[in-house]
Structure formats: structure tokens, C-alpha cells
Image (cartoon, rainbow, N blue to C red; front, side, top):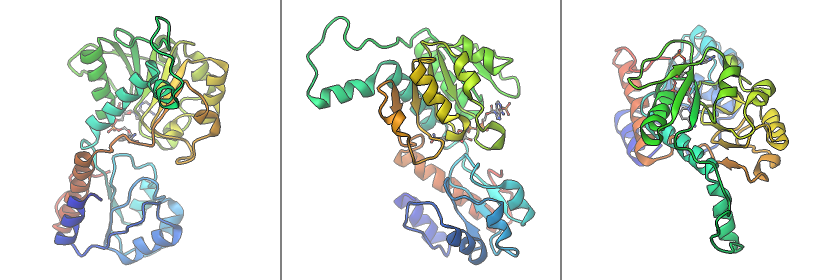
Length: 308
Ligand code: NAP
């Protein structure tokens, strides 16, 4: 937690704050469920069905998740154990959309590769055909998942870069600027210059971007993933990049995070960020405060602000 959130947690609640930044171990998850009234977990803390089964009568009654994505919590199993779950939507939207734009620009304009060139001392100076990238302005972006973050990315693409926007979602959207709803993922993948992933993770979207979708993409196109690593079949992505089925990828998340395959690290045409979507002081504090607002509401027997 940021200092501001930690101070509030200590002031308002009888709080134990874990200092390690690694995910909770199985033993720690068991202790969390059996010894605390409320737990504030975050991504990586795998509250799967087995965790709940291991504590048949949990003391914990709320998992106030720090983060909007909750694919690391088995919601059905939590509810069956009498444990409510909340998350931190909204607080993360703009920062995550900004990271999507960062990845789009960095990948299209070969910024990571350029940085590596300058730092290596190998740069020979400007010339007319040096490191030519892709011009994003006016291109066609396809956004898979058009919720809070997907729409915020679309807004930036439309107003900032004059891009045409298509999207895939389960329902129709009217964001107040021109967007076209795609009927099928394959057709969207084949039509766009940049395909951006902004769907939740979980069983329903696991490997949504598979070999067939990657093969449908244009050889000049880019894939950007700020959603969850498991949404992409990473082995198929590596094969597609090696085969030139698509031109590049910008990734903030990985299928087996924090493991990043050597094959990806060694490719110049990919931009790799360490899950930076919400990584600013303000946003992490906003997320923490929303998590604690949920805790406070729960203790006051009021409705949760952002129930899952
Ligand atoms: P959201 O508002 O719930 O939006 C999710 C969108 O995905 C909705 O448009 C939904 O469609 C669509 N969707 C869900 N399942 C789908 C499916 N099977 N096929 C097609 N579309 C589907 O969530 P959000 O706040 O935008 O966040 C999205 C995700 O981003 C989070 O769940 C999280 O995993 C990830 N995230 C990553 C970072 C990071 O640091 N990289 C930061 C924040 C969030 P409908 O609107 O039709 O229901």
C-alpha cells in the first residue's frame, strides 16, 4: 500500500499490513481466511476453490480486492463460503488506458529498440530510412472488451490520433463518438492495424486470442495486451511473431507472470512492460482508498461501493 493508504488503514482499523510483495502462500491464504474479519488481497493472491475448501468456517467475511481484475479469486467458491468480494473499478481506468497508448506508440514507433540502440552506444546518427516504424495516426484500432478501460482507450485513439475504432463486447455501446461494433473476433482481427485487449481475465476469456486469431491478423498489424496474460495463448503469440503473422506486440501482462519467455525478451519487435497499468502514486492511493471505503461500508453494514 502507498504510505497514505497504509496510514489510513492503521488509523481506522486494527490492521496487520504484510510487507512482502510476493503473492500470499497457501499457508498465508489459510491464515487470512481463518484469522481476519476482512482481507485486502491483490492480483497473484490465488484464492481458488481449494483455499476456501481448506477453511470450512472462515472468520473472513469480505475480500476487498485491491485491483479491478479479480480472476485470481474464485467468486463462486467465495460466495458459497459466505465471503463477499469487492474490487476497485474506475480508479484504474485512465492510467491503464494510458499504458495501452504507451505500448501502442512504443511498439509502432520502435521506441524500446531505439532506446536500446542509443544506450548501447551503437547509434550511427539520423538518416532517412533509419528504424522506420508504423504511423499510428489515422489507423484502424480494434478493441476487444469495451468497458471502462476499453472505452478510455478508444477515446484516446479517436480524439488524440484520429483513428477509426471498432470494438468487440457482449453488448452495444454508445460512447458519444463514432465506433463500430464488430460481430466476430476473427473479422475484427483481420480488419485492424492494432488489436488491443481490454477484457477481464478468467475461464471465459482464457486464450481468447489463440493461433487462429493471430493467423487472421495482418502481417503489418500489432497486438497490445493490457488485460490479463491468460487472454493470449503466449506460445501461439511467440510462434506468430516468429512467423511474421503479425508485426509486433506490446505487452503489460503475461500468461505465466512474472515469467517472461526468453523468446519474447529476445525479440526487437515487442515492447515488454512489467504490469505497469495502474502504477502511479495517485492511482495506487485511489485504489487503496476505494478498497478501504469498501471495508468501512461493510463494517458499517452499508452496501459495498463496488461489489463483485
Ligand atoms: P469492465 O468495465 O468490466 O469491461 C470489460 C469489458 O469486457 C466489457 O465491455 C465486457 O462486455 C467485455 N467482455 C467481458 N467478457 C467478454 C467476452 N467473453 N467477450 C467479449 N467481451 C467481453 O472492466 P475494465 O475496468 O474495463 O477492466 C478490464 C480488465 O482490464 C480488468 O478485468 C483487468 O483484468 C484488466 N486490467 C489490467 C490492468 C493492468 O495493470 N494492466 C489494470 C486494470 C485492469 P460488456 O460491456 O458487453 O459486458
